[in-house]
Image 1 (cartoon, rainbow, N blue to C red):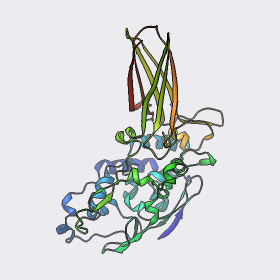
Image 2: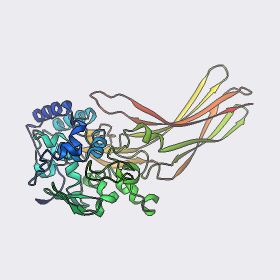
Image 3: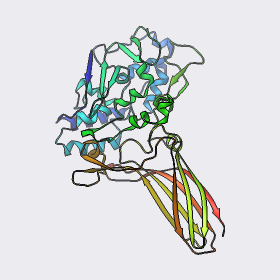
Image 4: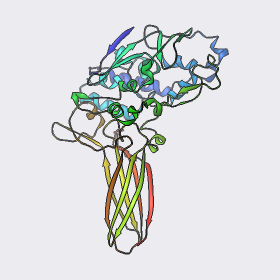
Length: 400
């Protein structure tokens, strides 16, 4: 079955009931005992894919054990059950009188682009960004507001490795799966022409694209593992990581930026602090993704006696609606209610921003200086909470 599916919005009045069912399915987990993938057991079972539609990740996991286990730990596998998404999803549903599921699920459960299962009552829908969606993807066409996925759903599976056939399915080599264009399926979103999410474009226009460094190099690095347990036996075999660490990963965030105090100047009661902040580890701007995410650079001075002085600089993309009100909730941003980008001072790949902070404190007093960067995201779950992660820090002692 082949089709090209654009994005859009569509009513689905049974979606909330279906959403509860999907949550129950997700809560039970996607558990497969490891012995199911052993060669001895694999020969005794008759694995069967769905040649007329999408195949469950559970079936994939019986042979592709290492890859499946990585995917299970990813946010892709939790893209429907994630409580942050669920809260925004419900709000979007009510704010649009039930017209939002097609837009939201087009990326959070992209099999719906083919199945139209917006009530979330099909098991495959609850799997989120499941194996068979990406490996049935033939091409990505750049369209607005959502890019179009050209699909070939059935027996043929597309991927980055050599072509061939195995008993359970056919294999088709796909150059697309080795490029960042694959990620553009969902990581680029321009409702009404407004560049809301531009992670792919940020990469495309930056130095990493020029050097041929793809998204997969950082987000799907290769490591030792078997592509198919019991089928391949090369002891040096490597697989692409499928945990897809990104903005939700503390280790990934800590690699993204570097903060350095370049110089501290004391002139009587005036202290001038020069701080460099560098996007050293991201192939896109920092922060990226949904504009409600922010990067905050703090500079702090602790004077003798305990008095603390602190200033900050916020790096963000700010979107305003037609009434000149900033959109701060994810559902409002994603529903395309923004009309203007009022501010976008996010840091480009490999860029160093040289910032200056000035403080006034008593002359001839020793002080301790610190600078650090926090990643800030305040989702509705269902009320706003602060999620702050220190990304890097530097410090110096300034003596009078």
